[in-house]
Length: 239
Image 1 (cartoon, rainbow, N blue to C red):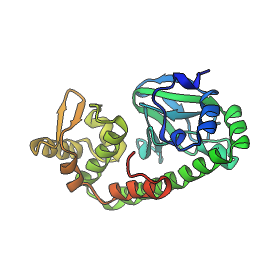
Image 2: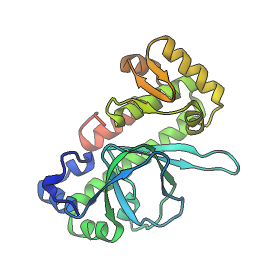
Image 3: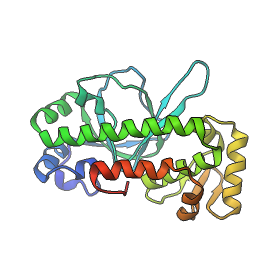
């Protein structure tokens, strides 16, 4: 397990806790390295451990019939995987996989339940995050139904960039098309237009955001809506 003093980077939900509650939680955590594409949970599967991403980024996806999984939510250093334990539910509602390699803090489900029982502050933070996550899922469902590919792609890239803290993103057009639920050719066209406008740089599966203001100008209003939901709950626009 970790010594609290050994943690130099944490997670924004943990940062919301009073110092004593944060130290207690960190003392039960183990720091893990997560690899791109690693499956973390199956829909309906048991919550074995709770993850608080630090530099890793997790995608939660839904699957319908024979279609490829569609991304419904994104979890980075602002969130957690396994929050349903706070509702007394020991199941994952959706499949979760790593879409950005990096580190996370992990705590076994029984230990997390004990922390919840002993810490009203942790309960408040997790319940608040569940509300924000529910808003994100609802917003994504509406976004997928009503907004154009270029606007959705810009929103998605901004969300990834927030959680990657400005680092280059390792992504292929095929992966992006699967996450957005559109044809690969549509992503290729939209990404090409963004590159021509020098909003992004794309090369060999790596995408670097060059102009956040430029992407924000073409992204749908779902992006600022997501930020506002987090700000209202936790007092910050920053993810």
